[in-house]
Length: 288
Length: 155
Ligand SMILES: Cc1cc2nc3c(=O)[nH]c(=O)nc-3n(C[C@H](O)[C@H](O)[C@H](O)COP(=O)(O)OP(=O)(O)OC[C@H]3O[C@@H](n4cnc5c(N)ncnc54)[C@H](O)[C@@H]3O)c2cc1C
Image (cartoon, rainbow over all chains, first blue to last red; front, side, top):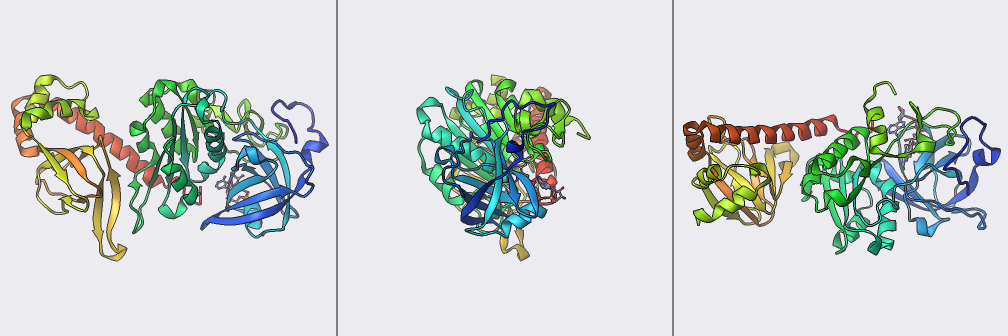
């Protein structure tokens, strides 16, 4: 395992950090038309691997390339890893073509996690859009496993259509629990859908939480995160209680190559989870 | 009982801060209503002056689309929402169906009655228009976000 929360910026990353560990696909599930989830186990069973909610791995498909993908499983089940991936290009397409028993390389875990410590003692509001539920799912596992440490737990989840909803069976289980509230909405209904139809931000004014005592974590397309943050601020959640997860193209994942640099911030090293008030202006800056 | 509706209206988020005498004027045009699941609050093309403050339940706003297998849900609304703009603009025709998807409790306002009071008392009229303009701005923004198709594969 690589502990990389404070890597040096001005020296080359150690070769170890750049070296992928071999993992094998143990389970493969198709979630939606363009999204799939793999469970990975280390080929070397003695390989230690611990991570925190919100951290990501660089997944290396041999002979193709690498892509940063958040860990979407339960940190308590490490070293097993779960990754939910949406197919967009070269690496993710090649990854979709793999199956149970295939091997891939993992570098990680990288990046700063979601603020589960800051959130302790507070209501926890998770606002997820589309594939953004995947990086937030470990927070749900963590809060549910440590339920008495937190106040209310609220998940607000929006997708494009009902067919794009991730983790449907789990969502139903969460929904039936008495110790959390789940609200799902879609931008466009299809025949047979009986749930909410509207953007996810419209769920914020009505959701049951105490704004002043809330820590909110937002993950999804950047426009959605900006508007969700505004909605939460209007509801009265303090700006320094809001967190977002940013995505930028990455290469080294250790704050060396500068691919994911956003002004002063390296998304891989200083993020991907950022306090909203630290990146609010950067999110609005064009050409970054 | 009409006189009991004042507190419900005063508590509605959109009417927050409204002067009590204005709430009372609105109460004069208000009625407590309920709809069973699958019952329509209104139908597309209908002439109607009513609008609703939802107190409980969900309403689905739908458009009939022959190729889409019947009704297409445009938006769903729930507790705390206001339904219906047609009372504001002549000739007051509905352009959507409003269907209760569960038991709905609401306060219905007679738009013609309220328009009359707004004409007579411009201060009340301004308060109401200000609040409806704000509602429309929020709706428009939500609609713009949906139009952006934020989750589309090509982002
Ligand atoms: C910290 C971090 C965590 C991430 N976590 C996840 C995750 O959990 N699940 C997941 O599916 N993805 C996640 N991503 C996004 C993922 O890394 C990219 O989708 C992936 O790198 C694309 O690689 P590719 O080779 O398949 O596509 P490329 O061949 O590099 O790109 C092909 C096309 O897709 C576009 N594209 C590239 N990235 C994205 C993107 N993020 N969204 C939409 N279009 C894109 C490109 O502009 C290009 O047009 C994360 C990214 C970061 C930085």
